[in-house]
Length: 282
Ligand code: MN
Image: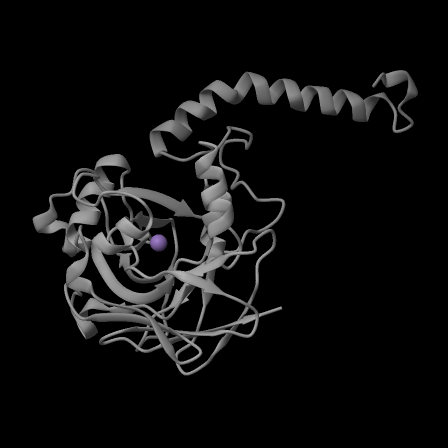
């Protein structure tokens, strides 16, 4: 882009070039300041000027029961194969395998208000769409290498959640030794009810967890059957990643996962929390 063909004249071009040069020259100093304050600025803003953003990105939030406050979601972690019978039905040996984790994007959240039934569009690309009923722990604090004995201090509250799964894609990618993210991490793949603070409901180490489809119970187990408790999940996960307030952990599903089709009504229940009701729509 030569200045000779610029109808706005040389002054504008010069200004652009000067701005670029200033950005490059000042970048080092501003970056040093950014590093000290722990912020991710690229150093583009002049000192004393509050940077603005060209557009806004919505913060995903989940309502908190008994409060006008909402829980801001930072990351969504999920535990794989955390009930022995489910590990076996997925083809692994629960006695020898440590827990593993994966993530969903925060906008996988589909909030479902208690007493309502959410419409849940059947996702693209799959012909084998599975439910997985799960207890969800919501963190108010975090850290690295958190001891299991202190891990529950990080928990703000709990919710009922579904780890919806494009099982055919998950399996096909696994068979090809490719990441099976497309089977797990997609829009609306994480329906969830409101967060219930620990002060209201305590911690969940036992109690029934179940899922019915069109009134027929499909999954039915007890939270005490989790191979790794919520406290142990937090301890293990914090060895891999520093955890923070706003993190959610979907704690794994019991056995008898299975498919739903358009028109099916899923009702997920955990003793002590309201039913999560989701209808699959076209
Ligand atoms: Mn799951």
